[in-house]
Length: 443
Ligand code: SUG
Image 1 (cartoon, rainbow, N blue to C red):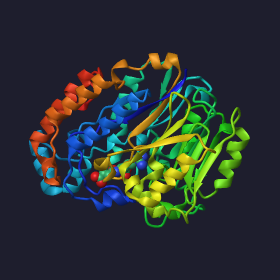
Image 2: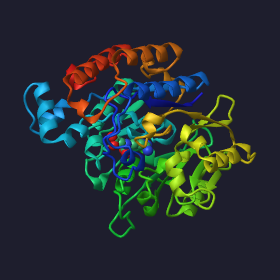
Image 3: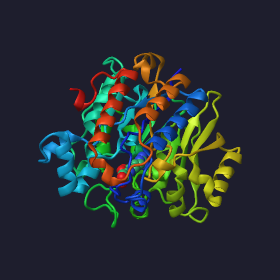
Image 4: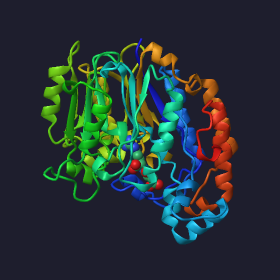
């Protein structure tokens, strides 16, 4: 059977709050607070373990090497590693923070993925996101591409593209702005690309950057050899971006034939619905729209309701995987209960997870995962060591306990011992997950 697997990003040992992300309310609010990298990694692993226990295919993607000394050298900080760290802390602490972010944990921004059923050549296509609007994120795509090519290695089954040119005119933040709708995961899907800015004539957000450009979605649709009739480009509402909706997955989520979204997600919701109704075969699409009067955009953003994962269970029903913050807000929690109780949609349950360490940087359940639809032959071609089961989850928890700190503040990022421990941790991880020499320090 063709399944949708979730690949969650393992939180790296330098997870911290540096206030780097524009338009991301949570990250701005928690800037310079101490973080707990060990707790962050364990919270992510608990979600992975739980989803695997539900009978779902759950994989893990490795964190990146941080602080990233090669980029600091490229920026003119030379000498031994400890000297590089000392100099950048003294002369440009904001660059040290940018080179130390554990932001690769949010694998919804790692790449855009199109399943074989949607592509003219039948292969699964991957394009790493360039993450061009933020320095700390723009250094992710090289190693992301390497990791994906190592894990999805077969040329017969997988096609790997280079990230798009790294400029805001081609700004691409990956699957967070891409929703696939289909009758079954294995059926020909409809791919919805959501953008924040396009040509000069289109309305733009006034306060925050539009991170995704329409030109990026158009390029990816070409690269992935998608049928234009099954592709739709839709604009995000600029006022919602200014209110903190920096990615579409903060205000909309789809799974199979279901699209759950806020009233203020898209500029033209009707055009999306008409296209879906016209193209979807085999099943009637279901749209759940939460009205502004029932839940404001501010509450959608603070709770991350729409950043819940919508998962198809082995019995065919759907379940919502929500952040704890959804239950902390009564209006949000009753909106979720109404969805679960409504027999008109296939969502039959909701569960909350404590992902607070990631949430404080604006990363909810759906941010932490990259979805990859795989048929049985493609599943068999994936590096088998990355699938989470109880044994691997326990092994990774032990690994976290061995290397991760439980408190980190920005001043710690220059500590050479943090760099050493991180490299030792990643070196061991590449052995556990059989990833070869993935990192620059291993090459
Ligand atoms: O790009 N936060 C990330 C959160 C990404 C969430 N992903 C999705 N919505 N899919 C971002 O804004 C904060 C880092 C800091 O400030 O320390 C950060 O990069």
